[in-house]
Length: 433
Picture 1 (tube, rainbow, N blue to C red):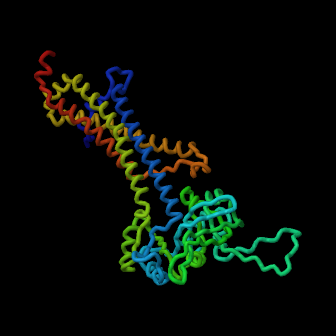
Picture 2 (cartoon, rainbow, N blue to C red; picture 1 turned 120 degrees about the vertical axis):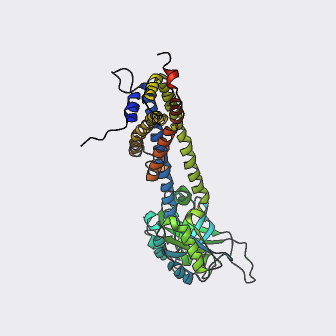
Picture 3 (cartoon, helix red, strand yellow; picture 1 turned 180 degrees about the vertical axis):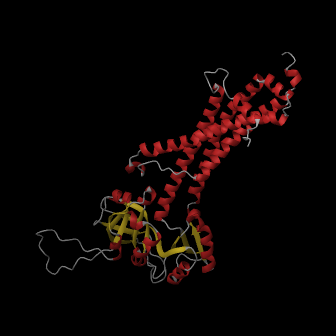
């Protein structure tokens, strides 16, 4: 049984990649070409891994505080018959949970500071099914939001006032970590919620006198995003309806789905199930500007770093061009022995392909190693940057795209030198030999 042999183009191509001197197995030009491809692939994988990690970390923090889909009424500011609509939403396929909410902008004051915030009225039992608020509580308890806080204890040895009315209790409020620090209000402290729009009068007009109510801080949450931790607070849904004179209406419905990347399609299904005038917006649509900017930045970084590989491909072009000029006699001999133009082109194309494959094979694990070193040893102060380590996530599609691009660029760099070698005239090359 005969042993299968490789085409002669493979042996000739591998021989051309070696240096002339016997003590060096690889030529300097070949080494530089491989190193250029290696660095380009490693830089691409490292950059895309870090950018994907930051994007997914930001995405997780946003979806930990906000729901996947928000449902509103197009024609008015509130949703009166929300209980029936919540049940209808929960029957839509791929919907895991739904809960009503109230959303208003108010002014929050303490003894030492004033801050404009977004106040959300929620159902604590249902909110934990839709967002990660329960997991983000750092001090206090989410369940305390449902019952009024007890009145503050009297000072020790303080004389009791005869006939004094009992001090009223105050409803609970949950503050973000940064908001709590800014107001110097922590669990057990009291803050004032000021609504710039007062209650409606008997004639139907809105009073210009602000409405003020005292709340007791029952918990502090930390989402990991400064924008949320510094400008967001929660109160119970009935208290929000009472404070804003909303009666039995709510602002909208929060929805959690089983696949965040199908949220847009599920939102359209919710609209179809509820009908007009309801409007469902998914998390990508609500944060379109942010995620579009991150996506565009990732694409631009990929294109810019591909230039490293393109620059490295010029080394391949110069290496093969010099090789063609140096090996004119050998090419002429091969042609005289019957080698076709396609065979000569395959020899030099194989050289560039080997350089690209070798550089890619070394660059991929080098990129993984680079990311592991950054994620392991590069730390941050979480009180300043909100992260302790660089988030890294390498997607298989990114690795395949980078590898394919490097190999394709390396192969494209061989076309012109290979064509120059293939059109060489044997008689002209051997005329003066």
